[in-house]
Image (cartoon, rainbow over all chains, first blue to last red; front, side, top):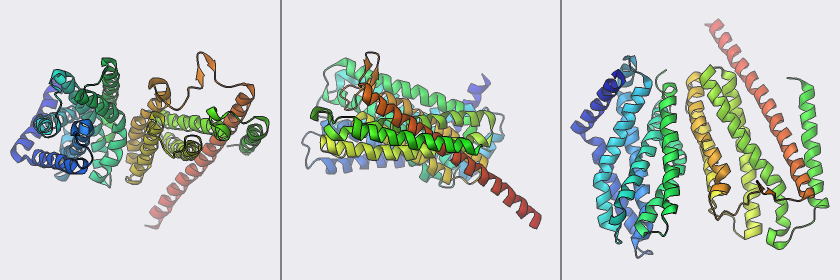
Amino acid sequence: MTAIRQGWAILRKDLLLEMRSKEVFTSQFLFVVMAMVIFYFAFSPNIKNLTTVGAGMLWVAITFTSLLGLNRSFVHEKDEECLDGLLLCPVDRATIFAAKFIGNFFFLTTLEVIAVPIFAFFFLTGTFLPNLGWFLLILLLGNVGICGVGTLLATISMNTRARDLLLPVLFLPVMVPVIIPMVLATNYIFTQGESMSELSVWLYTMAIFDIMYVVAGYVLYDFVIGD
Amino acid sequence: MKKGVVWVLGAISVVALAVSLYWIFVVLPIVSREQTGFSQKIFYFHMPAAIISFVAFMVTFIASILFLAKKDFKYDILAYSSAEIGLVFGVVLMIFGITWDKLAWGVWWTWDPRLVTYLILLFLFGAYFFLRSMVSERMKQARFAAVFGIIAALDVPVSFFSTRLIKNVLHPVIFSREGFGLDMNMTIALLLAFAGMTALYVLMLMLKLKVEHMMEDVHVLKDMIESRRD
């Protein structure tokens, strides 16, 4: 019970901070929309129907945007030495991970709630609405994977000399086993693939990696935070 | 470490690799064009190198877990020594692989699942060493590297099983329940190359560990001299 209360306190602090400053959300939103505009000009000369490359565009935009948020979630802790204060509190390290993970997940999901409809409006011609439920499940699984391993790796990179420079180097290769099924499953939804069994293979792969990464983050967090 | 062991391992790897080369180029006939012809001979060094690099990364994985559990630096040294040798075998494997690609299929690179997952694995262990170089404090460096080593090694089974899980893969499954995809002479050549490379890996790991332990000792002695001087 105490763990939930403590976790909620950390989460509430992050939410309040973001609600008052809105700095991460604003920059992420601008970034993701600009990325879409650039994609349009990069692909449109050769590809008539952008739905066919839609899945790749969507996930490249989201993955790179998530890097901004993951870095920010620890930069402000480090700058004012808030992290040391947090570590001095009698809080389990795993609870800090859980709170940060949920916070990152919440921010990324909020961003997608606004960015994905804009994306669909700009690029998707074919109707994917009958499969909307599956699409939301893919987004959910993708977000869990990104935030699970991202929270852990952001903490590591924040405590090194390179600081936020290191996160993409560590994060992107680790994310590939999640990104590949994510893109393939989304592509299936956008282009209305043939068999349902294909989709389920990718969903299982994502779910397995999500579970592995979140559990690894929860168990290993004790070793990466503080001294 | 006994000097005799080094000599024995060295002898095993030299003899086994030399005999396997003889077997590959002299004893074995050239396979048919459908089985990629002369370039198929790369296979006998390609597959053992792949397995050794997987084993090396798994050693890193286990040593990383042991380090986090016991906080003993000897496991950290084992972890990164094995990762380094794994990376060497991995790069050699990639060179064999793309050469074979070019000779057999006429392209340097294909986006085959096994190739992609293996390339990512190399990037992961490249990042592992980049991470190490970015932390100067010894304890923190070892802890971070161990955590990242564990996460990176989760990709090893994916790469290993990618030929079994995904259809339309260029890499054949050699060992399966139905039996063995090779005849007697091919098996001998493969096993000889495998024995030679295993001995080479163990030898390299032993020498690397010795050097690294010496370096740790030198650091300790240097620190002692520094503190005397002040």
